[in-house]
Image 1 (cartoon, rainbow, N blue to C red):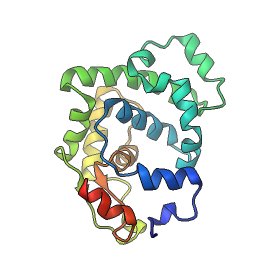
Image 2 (image 1 turned 60 degrees about the horizontal axis):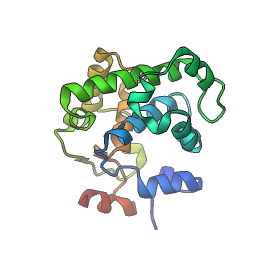
Image 3 (image 1 turned 90 degrees about the horizontal axis):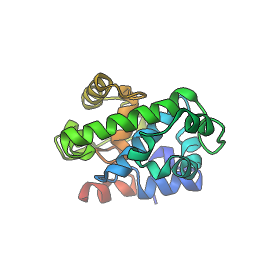
Image 4 (image 1 turned 120 degrees about the vertical axis):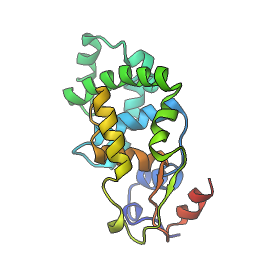
Length: 189
């Protein structure tokens, strides 16, 4: 079975992520928030590091319940910074709380984070046709627009590369290479 180059010879977590999640369209706000936070946490790190800590993140951050996270106290943040199950970076932990508050504001304004985020791709996935991973860009005009708007709203860790990684993760774009067994499957979704 052929896969995208990055998934070949990868860890069991990465393999499962590639085969079952990466690029599958997500419209559930809780899961979109989870990916927003995890993609921001990845900044400067490998995705395999974040995948290994994913369950720790879910436990530490109330299963990515934005309403709960938005109310975290300074004491709770200090406790999180001692938790080895997550990336213990003060800026990233504080950004999670800030982003939770802003996520809730976006939900109020647009009815859902799904409606807001998918609006950057006009509500439907962009179906790319990359032959190899070297062809896949780190950002696009759509991720530039998302990043610019999110930054204007005050979101943290939402540069264009992070926004593009989010778009890839939640299926706003299908960046599986055309030879990958997931490519056609995801295009049919």
